[in-house]
Length: 185
Image (tube, rainbow, N blue to C red):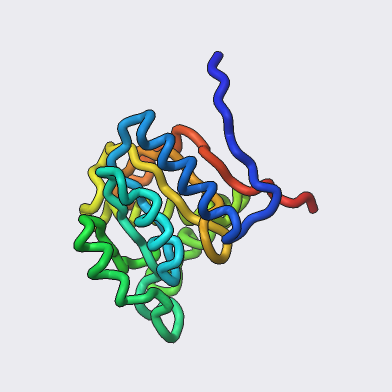
């Protein structure tokens, strides 16, 4: 039997971002993880991650919303060159769990709803790792830490083996670093 610690936040949201990133930094160092896949809608989480990981060799793969998800892109595009000059990548790829209208099937929405039973951040963590692997920004079979949140900021982190979307069954969630407690009801 193996016992491991999982951090549960009392509430989801942006106020957990620093704690999530510091925990991810600790886990990455302990486990030799070289890449983190980070969801960032506006650039807030991307900038916070870049600041916390500035003294490491960890590469951040930042995944904002795809263009057209909302009327305007919320991600601060002025941040992109600053992130890239530090060796990080920013990828505006297709959000896989929002393609039901294009493919004419409810499978993407159904999968998203199943993953949301573990929390919104968990759903996003899985989606962004698939997106990063589809773009060739993480290797198939590579262990990464995925970071996402509920609404804004970060409140969820998972240790995941990456796989592209056409090999979804090869994606594995190994450990939950942290997530918000889900309200009853």
